[in-house]
Structures are given as C-alpha cells and as structure tokens.
Length: 351
Image 1 (cartoon, one colour):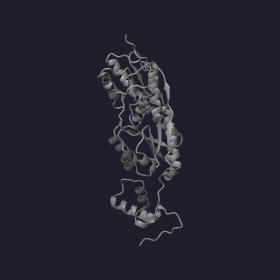
Image 2 (cartoon, rainbow, N blue to C red; image 1 turned 60 degrees about the vertical axis):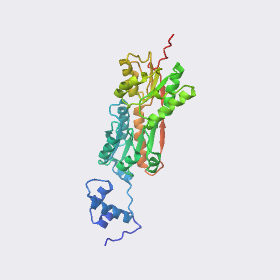
Image 3 (cartoon, rainbow, N blue to C red; image 1 turned 30 degrees about the vertical axis):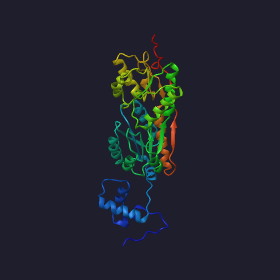
Image 4 (spheres, rainbow, N blue to C red; image 1 turned 180 degrees about the horizontal axis):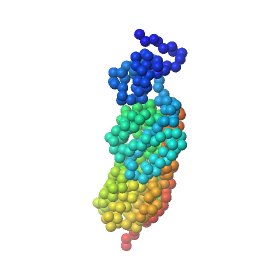
C-alpha cells in the first residue's frame, strides 16, 4: 500500500509517481496532456493526482523553462495583410521576452480552428493568442486547449461566462466607435443611402461594427434598409463577387461602410468591373488601415488600428497573464482613428 504523503510539505511529481507505480516522466506527460500515455495509465495517474491533492500550475512551469517556451498565435487569414502585420508585432515582442512564436491560420473556419489548436497544443505552448474564426464556440475552444493554458482573445470575442471563468483576456478594437465615425463621415459628405458591406453577423466584430453604423444612421434620422446589410466572407475575392448585390434593387446605395480593408479593396475591384468608379460615383470606407490602403486606387478612407502595435500589445498581455495566472480576466479596447482619403467622395447630384 502506498505510503501517505506528509501534509506539511509540497507534493511533488515523485510522490505521484511513487503512489501509482509509474515514472516521474510519465506523470509529467499526463500533466501536459500528451497523447503518448495510454488511457489506463492516464486514468491511474489522474486518480493519484486527485487522491494526493496535487495542483499543477502550468503557467509557472512554463515560466521556469522560459528560454525554450513558446506562445501559439492563431489568426484568421494568412492572406489578409492586417494579420501579417499583427503577427510581426506579436513575434517581435515575444522574441524580446525570450519566447518563440508558433503560428497557425484557420482560414475563417471554426472546424479548422479546432484542428490547428489541437496540433499546436501538442507542442506545449506556454499560452495562446487567438483571433477566433467566424462561428467559433467558446466551449469547443476550451475542450481543445484545456482550462490551464493562458489564452488571449484578439479582435473577436467568445462566450463571456467561459471567458471569465477561465481567466481569458480580451484585446479588442473600438469597433462600434470606428464604424460610427466612418458612417458619420459619409453622412457629412451628403450620403443618405449607405450600405454596410462584408463580414457575417455571427462574428462579434461584425456585429459591433454594424452597431456603430446603425447608431450613426439612426442619429441622422436615415433609414436602414435590410437589403443594404450585405454579408460576405471578410476577404477581397468574396467582396468583389458580392459587389453586384449593392445594385440589385432600386434605389441603390451611394456609399458603403466596409467591414475591413480587405473587403473594401475587394469591393472597389468589383465596382470597377461593373463600370462604377469608387471615389467618384460611389464612396467606400474600410477598417484597419493596412499598408496598401494608402496606395490603392483611389487611396482608401479607413480606420487606423495600428496592427503591428496591436500585435506587440497582445504579446505583452499574454506575458502578463503568464506571470499572474489567477488574476481577474481583463478586457482591453484599443482606440481607432479615422483616416480620410480619396475613396470617400460626396454623392453625385443628378439634375
């Protein structure tokens, strides 16, 4: 019969190993969720962990081996320049702190997201920075990453209860205010028929940006036509394909507040294909201020969000969580700024 462990000292891996007749290395593998341990051995170790009341502080363990620690970064779309800039900022800040960045992309698929997270977890990251794919479910994410790995949500939010219970931090953009600024700008130019273009309503960031657009329209006493709320994947190609939806029913809008810059640039391509001229007979705004926005034709009016700076901020927040794993979850809202360029033109006045 296993010897009782004295209650006055800290329980170690060796105590657990001795109590259930396995090696210390096997106990360590079980604690890290390794698939290398068979289910019967895992069950025996987990029972012994519970019997002896062992509490594993994963964040502290990661800090102890910081020189070889990694942080997983999971983004929505590698083809979106915004996330390239964001990832560069994350990697820069993590590198300075002695961490290696493990990168994964979901392609805006919640199913793919689970596979990517599961694969990255096999590498034992000290924490995760996740920009959730559209349709992500907080409980599925929790099932995959477990309750002990520090996680920071960027750009989109998940279930508040799951987020708070597991001390998941949130770094979001000021989406409502940003979309409101863009819409007010178009209204001040004289537009009255304004669409909201791109993204899907099950995305928190899309809902928030729509809310800002709707607030500005209501405050100006302008109608919000359901047919002017046009959904599409938040990518350039899909936005270009959906451009015709703006003109399916009369009267057509004269301007569009776009979900992000990729959508805005795609919409401008689609408008040109249909004989429209963004910045001349149709006004377009974006959201992000990627590098291409300034040199597009015409240059894009957008909301500056400083993606590289946001990446550095995300890295700093996840490192803070590693040092303070049990503090209350934080929600940080990053400011945005309207940058007016040539794509937002006044409406053409017909005689």
